[in-house]
Structure formats: structure tokens, C-alpha cells
Length: 242
Length: 290
Image 1 (cartoon, rainbow over the protein chains, first blue to last red):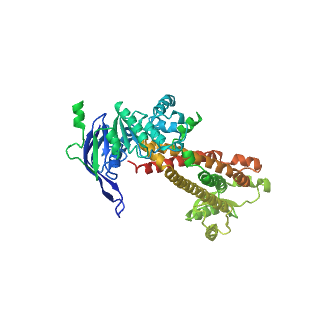
Image 2 (tube, each protein chain N blue to C red; image 1 turned 90 degrees about the vertical axis):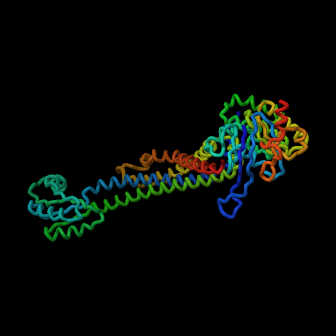
Image 3 (cartoon, rainbow over the protein chains, first blue to last red; image 1 turned 45 degrees about the vertical axis):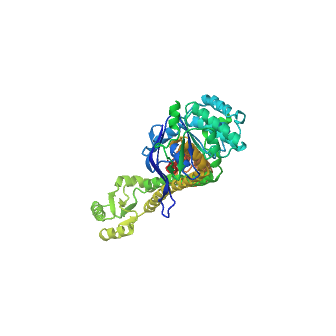
């Protein structure tokens, strides 16, 4: 499903010379997440959580090592091979990234339209999805008219409308109050229960304690991994339970 | 439903990001120049053709006595000169026929012999040719009536070439303007482009949206510019009419003389320039994303 193998990542720039590369933001990251798993990605801010997530949803390529997502080996794949895989991934950003000049309905419908679904068949799906996140009444509103929590639910709806195989969320509860954060997590667990592999980056320890799951812990760009060679806390218990 | 239709054509909100009259206005100004250049090229070509035909025999030589020996000698001298491309004695019967309206049919009247020559280079001085011919054939007179016409034709040809150069320049500037507008649109919609890219949109999809919008803006501007050029072109065609067409050609015929197919091609060509430039600009910009 997702496999990181000795992954190193540098961002360009930073140095005095054009084209120079900055220091390694990630080094020697190795882990594998099985299909249908729910995984927390933990660590202080600046530890590299967002970088790992961006590698997962193909917004970055590793500078070293190999990343395999949904069967695609990202490091050396031709550029044209990435978009079809991106369409099988849902992403929720902390800052939502909704398109302000499109209605709520059109924002949620975006992944289906990019996949070439006919207008007639996507209408019902989008309406159903808006009902699921409780915003069917706001379908024709602009995202700018919604509260932060409502915008976040729209972002979730857009991320899962096309039933992605992988759902990646970067600090999805950062802008939400506790009640909304729990509701959001319940939605993500529900998606996971329906078969989607889910990875959530968070630094909200209270929330993580409330929804226990295997976790990857990042510290200064490395996987902090005292006892598990795969970097996966808690999977052994899961296997035993299963 | 209106909302739906609007979306499917404009998921990037380019109608608002690439709005205003600056780009169509600039393209309109360039289309006006292009229309003038096209018409100029076509008009210059017509003038050049007509004048070239009139200048078939650019220079004639008259010999006072039409004796065969003298004609032969003159032809020999002329053909030996480096400036002369061709020298041909005019048939005395044809000459008599040409002069009959003025001289009547009397066969006894002595006519001069006439030799038509074509110069290799219209810029050569026919006086020098005449001087050298007169040295061996006394009394020979060189008449360069067609030469100025030939020079005018050469001028028209160079004007025509200049018009094509202007056309190419205009197309280049139009492409540059579209490229700048495309970059402005990319800057304005950077977030949207990145979101669509992240959702798995192909480069061709994003570039296609920009290309369609900019192509249409360019075509609209070009249409306005071409229409604005029409009155000026009709005026110019009216002025040139006596030179090209027959005497009865007037203001009415001037509209018919405009190069309509070429003018009609200006907006579609502007669409193509806008479309292709936007495609190239956006695709190059997208290469920075993984």
C-alpha cells in the first residue's frame, strides 16, 4: 500500500547559490503501511510530518530512497504516471484549500469531474456526500460564507467523494474546537471502516488518546523508533487481536 | 443549471482571473496593424504585377535608317554589352501597324527601326548603353520609357516584403503579450492550479483551460482590430483603385478589392497564436510541480 525505503528528502534553495539544496528534512525513513490501516503520524511541529504526508500524496518526490504508493514507485516514475495515482488519493489540508470562486457543490464535485464522470451521475453522489457531512443546505454557498468547521467538512467531503484508496490528512483538527475535532475524527474512522487506508498527522495528544491506533513518531526528520524496526507502534497488538 | 454550465467551462475561475480589456485591446491594436500589413502586402503585390507587365520592354532603341546591315550591327553591339539581357528587333510590319492610326497607311513613308532591349538590372543607366551604341551606330537613340515603371515595381516588391516582415513581428509581439497575460493568470490562480494538480489533473487539462480562455480573448481582440481597420483599408483601396483596376473602378469597387480571405483569417490566426502560446507557457510553468 505505502512503503518508504531509506527515504531522504531535501528542499531546493536555502543556500547562497542558485540550485543549491537545503539540509535533509527527512533522513532514512523506512516503514510500510498495509491496506485498510489507520495510522497516526505524530511529532512536534517541524519534525517532518507534512513532508512525509506530501511524499505520500505525491506532492513531492524523494531525493533519496524509494517511496511506493498504491503500487507506483514514485522516485523514478515518469511525470505522466503521477496524476492517475493522485486521483486515487484523498487529501485534507489544515488550511482546507477550497476554491473560493466555486460553490460548495462544485468544490466537492471537483475530483469526480477531473475523473471524467458525467454531470448527470455525479449530482446524486455530491448531494449524498454533502448530506453525510451535514451541509446539504449550503450546496450553493461560497466556501467563504462558511465557518472554519464547515469549511473543514467540505474539505473532507472533497477528499473522499471519489472513494479514494488512501486518505491523507495534515493536522485536520488544527482549526476546529474539541467537539468538531471529535466529529471529524469519527468521520475519518468511518471512512477507514469502509476500507480506506487513512493516515492522519496531528500533535493533539488528547485526540490521539481518544482514538487509539498505530502511530509513526517523527523527531527531527527521523523516525523515532525505540523498539519496533518497522517504526510501527501497536501493530503487533493489532495482529494479535485479529 | 447555469452554474453547472459555467463550471464545466471554467473550473479555474479564469473568466475572472483573465478579465478586462487590456489583453483584447492590445491584440486589437496588433490585429489592426496586421490587417494593414496584409492589405499592404496584397496591394503592393497587385501594383508590382501590373507595373512589371507594363515594363516588359523597359528600353527601346531607335535607328534612323532601317537598313538590315545597320540593325544587325546594332544588335551585335547591344548583345555584347554586359547590362543587356535581351535585344530584339521589332518586326517592321508590326511597327507600321502600331503607327498606322497616326501616319496613315502610306507604305512609302520611311520608318525608323526599333530594337527592344531588356536590361539585366533595372538600376543600370540606359544613357551609358546609348552612348556606347551611338559610338558604333551613329544616330541611334535610346528611349528608357519603361524603366521608371520597373523601378516602381521593384519598390512595390520591397514594400510587399516589408509587409510580411511586419506581419511576422506583429505575431511575435502578440505571442509575447499572451505569454505575459498567461503568467499573470497563473500568478492569480496559483492556488487553484496547485489544488487541481494535487487532485490529479493532467497538465493537458490545466493548460487546455488557459489556452481556450486566452485564445478566445485574442480572437475577440483580433476581430475588433480587423473591423476597425476596414474603413482605413477601404479608403486606401479607393485611392489605389485607378492604379490597379480599370478607370471605372471607384469607391464601390474598393470594398471588393480588399483582401477578404486574408482579413477573415486574422481572428482565427490570433486564436491559434493565443492558444499555442498559453499551452506552452502553462506547460512550462507546470513542470516545476512534481
